Image (tube, rainbow, N blue to C red; front, side, top):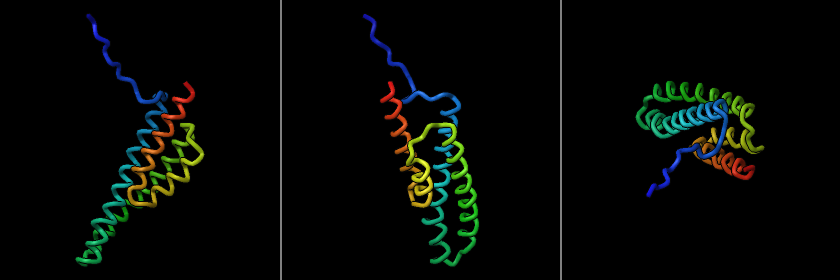
Length: 120
C-alpha cells in the first residue's frame, strides 16, 4: 500500500519578489534588533561600569546605520507587499523597543498568513 507523501509548501503563497522582500525585512530586523540588544546589554554596561566608551561608540554607530536601513527596507517592503494598516507604525515602534523587531516579524508573518488563508 502506498502512503501519502507530505508536500513541502510555503506557509503562505507569495510571489518570489514578495518573498524576497519579506526575507530582507526579516534579516534586517534581526540585525537591527541584535545590534540594539548588544548596545543595551553589553556596550552600555562596558561604558558606565568599566569606563570603556569605545564600545558604545562603535556599537552605537553600527546600530544607527542598521536602524536607518531597517526603516528604509520597511518602507520598501510596504510598497511591494500588501501589509495591514498597523504594520508600518508597529515596525517603527518595534525598532525602538528591545526585542521589538523580533516580535514585529512574528506578528506580521502571522497576520499575512491569516489574511491569505481567509482569501482562499
